[in-house]
Length: 186
Image (cartoon, rainbow, N blue to C red):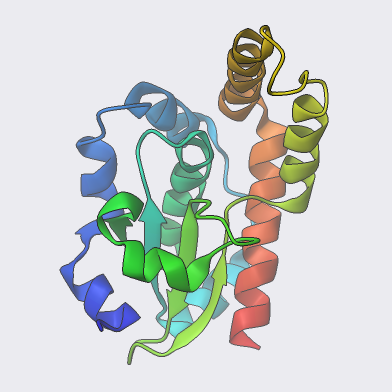
């Protein structure tokens, strides 16, 4: 069984991952261009000193990854962190180590020390983003309803639109990743 460090060593950079995306690439880059990293010099300096590596479990079809990966990239660039990506569907044994409530929800970020020790993880979304998603899904009819599929596609579209256009969601995501990193490094 491979260690997280071995996965990291064989993974592709976040930059390469974004450049070769087949789904959601335009939206991902739009978020990357629009997201403003908060002025947070003490936190950025702390991250630089820690010399963390981040292993991302992701897929380009995933709406959450579409929103969160560009936010993480901005943070990583500011703090000189290396982020490398593996595809969830190609790495089930790794994904099974980082389930969310028993599910294979992504993105999932694994924080590694320079020597490869797992310091913590984050993902797939912040509590406030989860609340927004839950509220949208609560409006869905029962799965047996003939209109379910149509309503499901509408809800997914609404969520995707918010992910690509709502700076509040981006900031909330950044704050939650920041909190998780601080906890992992304490």
